[in-house]
Image 1 (cartoon, rainbow, N blue to C red):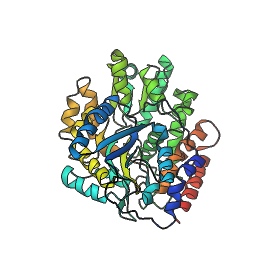
Image 2: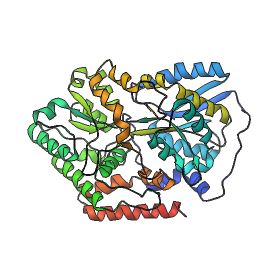
Image 3: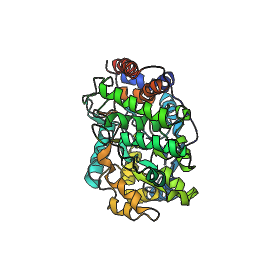
Image 4: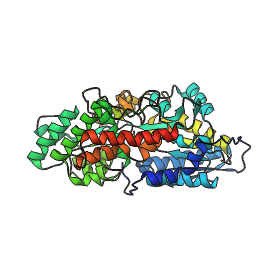
Amino acid sequence: MADSRTSHLTRRTFLKGTGVATAAAVSPTVIVRAARAKSDTLKIGQWTHFVPAFDEWFDKKYCPEWGAKNGVKVVVDHISVNDLRARAAAEVSAKKGHDLFGFLDPPPAYENVVLPMNDVVTECEKKYGKLAGLAQHATFNPKTKKYFAVSDNWVPDPLHYRKDVWGEVGMKPDTWEHVREGSRKIKEKTGMPAGFGISQELDTNMMLRALLWSYGAQEQDESSTKVMINSKATVEAIKLMTAIYKESMTAEVFTWDPSSNNRFFVSGKGHVIQNAISAIRTMEKQNPEAAKKAGLALPAAGPAKRMASEHLLHCYVVWQFAENPETAKKFVVDLIGSYNDAFLASEFYNFPSFSKSVSDLKGKLAADKVNPEEYAILGDFEKYSAYPGYPGHTTAAMDEVFNTFVVPDMFARVAKGEQSAEDSAKQAEADMKRIFAKWNK
């Protein structure tokens, strides 16, 4: 990611931030029926995109044109990535805010204060093809049979690496063992460190889950009810990342925020990170000569499989207290129908959640004006990508596990020498069981 503002969300602040949603989850659902629009304004709250060209297109072209066509004024408020959750909680507490609210990770804890989006998903699948499996599992509650959100896009999370530096040691970061060995050799030869965060931040949350899955580990079972984190595979994944840290990284990775790995790579300080393509796009603009030496790679393979987490899974909710609920839903349907333009405006950052909403995606990647060979690998990323809660669904319990950084903390304790890998996996298991017990009452 590329946002310089940091927010270390503790378990206490998570519970405070989702207090209204938590209460709703354990009490009778309050149904607010969609009524006629109370306003001629559609209010949208969403993040400040890491590719500025997307916000330029969305704010100054798409929204004004859509508003004129539909007889409403569209007002877009951009919110820092680190403030999105707190802003959502404040709106729910006040029962007042935006008609349409965009999250960067699924918000199942808010299911009882949002309108079901089943009708939106159904219409979009008829018009724009099947919803991607990772987006379906992340936004659908199989118990209530409701979509609590609808995803318009998800973001791949490829490895970024310096091809010249890796070439000097005769390797590529194709497997996690190669990442370890190559990083050690590069550190010994050049002094350049590797860059994998072990911090309470979003990028770490995603990258470490990819490592766990590649070793065959998982946080929960397919039914989303049983905690599975304490396993031999988890222990081995922790030991691997601890070895990479001790051999090839610096202590700064314990305090990184979502922008740190971008700066680390773009500046030329480090030789490998795992991140959305905002990193290499920034390098192309700020340091084009260095960008020629940079490459993108598929996620590193582990002993079990090759997997990555989606970097972001953008999804919209419509609050039950929205003044323009039906207009908000129509906006989402039409936006998804305009994803050819959205994909290009995002410079390939926003991948479509509906299979046919972008035509000839691989052809567009191959036609990149800067580095078509590197971007072409993104065309197959969906088959390697999963979501928090894999292989189950993203539940309210998983939402809390994710946003209280149980997984990053599990890795950090071992890398810092505070616990053994076995003891840290046991502590993560205990933490997760407490969370699951609360939400699964």
